Length: 271
Length: 271
Image (tube, rainbow over the protein chains, first blue to last red):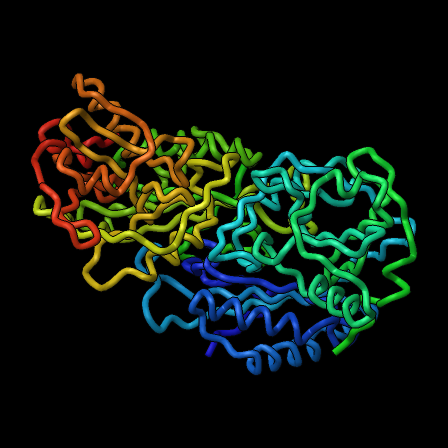
């Protein structure tokens, strides 16, 4: 079992390993009153990646906490709010090496939902901060996010997102979004094994596209794929923000289409 | 200026960015009463890397905190103890992107010194957890240490350290130590740009060796370099543990020599 902390009552103990080493995971879930967007997928990812790290926590236990959080926070916000769960391996241990049988800490907080992005889309830039993904931790929403912080820090005012590239120059993801390109020959997104964070919204949108008979290809994404003439639309995917069209990338205008919105409405999948 | 927290009085605020994103740095300093081993170098690294992250803190301010910590903690331990500083960007902000003008948090804690390793040396293994180093953050003792945690977690009982390799298979460093090989043709250590953490003990030992007229080469280190016949001795370097000879690597016995101990005594450089 875990030890539960409510952020509005105080922080984690000083020797928590989440602070010391980033030894933990987090989830940020868009809530409408007591229900969450793609909630089951968030909890499934958190429980699965905790297992990869050897942090014992069950989906059932996490769901109970979300219910409790709904009772606690739903009345404090207008309809939409954001629930954040930080799960750490727990307290102490000698250095990096965890002791067997450590009890995880779970810190629960809430905040207002961000304002919606209009269908006209956003601007994005390409970050000079490279993204390195350790294959053992690919896709994992761990607390090790210094690369994303430094890429976001560089953003000019008014630019919505910074896209990060791997050492070969391929576009991998934004600081807080996965990438999806609509081309005349189908939809393209970087493959799971290349991702720092495997977004639940990405997974859900790909499933909807495939269920709708669309062609979806998971492969490396070059800047030229997006700026070239085959591009029908380019999207940033995030479970709190939805599917956000990009109207300008690194100073180049992109076509903005209604394509994805006609296939699925990402923020309406409440559970 | 920073906001100072003493770990024996409580932890950081719930929305500290060190916990949320690993957005910060740390130092672990071996103390003898009120003086620290390689203290100036520790504070120099912390202030320099804080600058790389855009976290404003001066060496002078850090030194004042160490003095205060000495007054507070020295009487609680027998001579040797360990001082830990965790510096974070501070509280809050919207997502990864830091707000301008954030006030850093500094969390100070103390613990007993680890027991000394005898001249007979230790055993080490090669970790299956690969090490990926983002060139922008090379050498930086950030709070993003999930790779080191997972490599240390795998260690068999009685094995002192896990050595980590880069994607090409070259040995880079241990979970908490830098590597130094003594060969018949001189001393070899992996270069700074390849390191996850650029240890202050590594820097100090290399300077002592060079001052003593020894040949020191910074280049990629293969397992065969260590297991081959040219090896006179192989060391793990850490500013709290000193220079620790390895007597067995991955089941292969290595020669243990007095070579390094006759040139310098790493834990006696008090400042």
